[in-house]
Length: 384
Image 1 (spheres, rainbow, N blue to C red):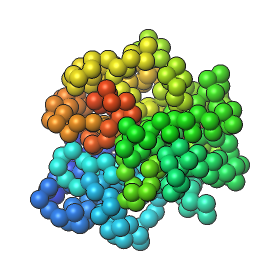
Image 2 (spheres, rainbow, N blue to C red):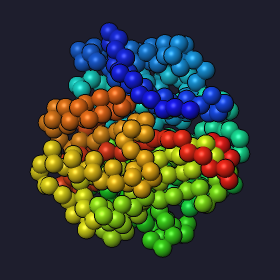
Image 3 (spheres, one colour):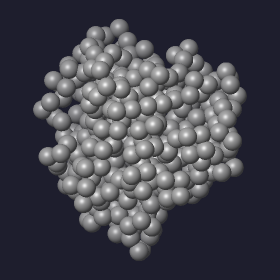
Image 4 (cartoon, rainbow, N blue to C red):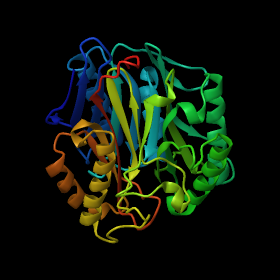
């Protein structure tokens, strides 16, 4: 077994970063970040370049892989989402997420793709995408939305509908959901409604400060329809035992989120018989009193954010070397040059994307999330 990163692959119109975790007799997994690199090209040219690169990789270097989840980052969803859906309709082979979070390299589109081998997949009738191997069923959801009156009602409906989707599959929100993402239009205005609805729905599902919450990112992002104020992506696992799921706290660096009125876990790791998967929630420059650290200083906020993530990973006996992907959210596009230079120096080969997406508190200039895997033998559990 091994996990490895490699120098980015460059073509005339794209740059691709790849993380590989390859297992001889089990499920291998891969993360791709494919970036358009020609800002002067029309949107459809940029999108086609990304799609072509993806299929070339599937035919050669990643032959035999199956797409599990794709998230497209668009610069103008209202004018781009329909074209994307039309071009990818025949190959909608996985859970699909589309969000307006403009790539900060000046292009119109980028994509994160998660792939695996030796799994059975199907789209379930309720919209969840099932990935099956051994005793586990992994349930991915992308782009859930509704058009209720405000962000609170939209979030409440999203979560209640998801609870019913899980129940239909023999699952529960508290026992099976590992990760959520909430993309909030005008996050400075609409995020309080998301928080209120999530807090109230969670209580009904036995998710409290005395039990646990769910790892999550709540961040600025838009749907193509301006009436959609909140959209949600999800990941759950059926067939998992409670003792396989562990929550990350890093109390020397971070405080419990309920102390400032929100309800999510800082991170989660899941142990299988052959590996540990790690999910780090959206993490910013915060201390263990819930205060913004280094207001107004993008360099110091980035460094403190890294320190926080590192502390969470250490609890999971992992490092940044185990991370297969990073998504970096910036409030101010003017900070991109500094932040990219810092990331390129420290993480030259980690698949990552930088997008314009305000964080849920105005004082936070930057936030990041990541997902990774490391070899870990747990004989009491079935392999992934």
